[in-house]
Image (cartoon, rainbow, N blue to C red; front, top):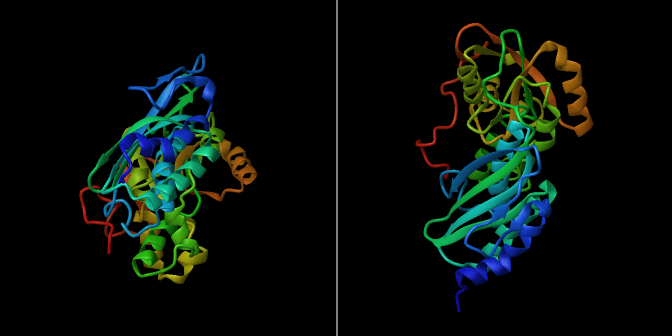
Length: 319
């Protein structure tokens, strides 16, 4: 007999309501709405993302990877603001109540939720094409959160991790590679840079997470800050897996591939040593890749890609 909505929630998701800072959960899963209590003197930081099968991930991915990615891409938004994760809600649209799929999805979701210390406090389930919507709630000290509009002329431009590797991983998956391939893992299991976002508070002048492509997202900083951003192609991290590609292909993936969920941020040159120290303490690659300049938009000195990044109303992600 198929699971009812309430049985589905109770069996696979009710345990996730206690993984976060439960002192703030006055009322969680099981009622018409959650009641949440903010820590004194903190601002609420909220973000929401929808992942649609065939658009944001291949339908063939393992449910465990889908569960991880669904939460990771939302936590990455909190990371870009320097916010501390607190709670999340989940709206899950399913073709059917496939219990093995649900078990894998809940496992991937739950493992990341436990590591991030974020509690599931409500949501909805319904029938239809596979779609996952998660809303995350975090907190930040008033006037301290990172934003996109603070870049200043002369600031340096930085990026964490290895942008482009996730796009290579998706390409390999679509060609039949195994999910445990290192590049494939970058696409399947993105690691939201929450700790680094917190470390950048007071150091970075502007920040964004790299979801649509490094060049496009750096352009969002430029647009919001009223300045230009110039990336130096020679400074981009193209080592390891990307090094097997042609220079043009590697640069195009690094600049426009998307799905990296790394942090791109600006900071004054005087903050460089502290940024490098914070990244080293976290075991996270982080490098300067350009600068804030006069003008508008984002460009790459020494290379002009055919496109700037992912288009939400473009082609399907499935092969």
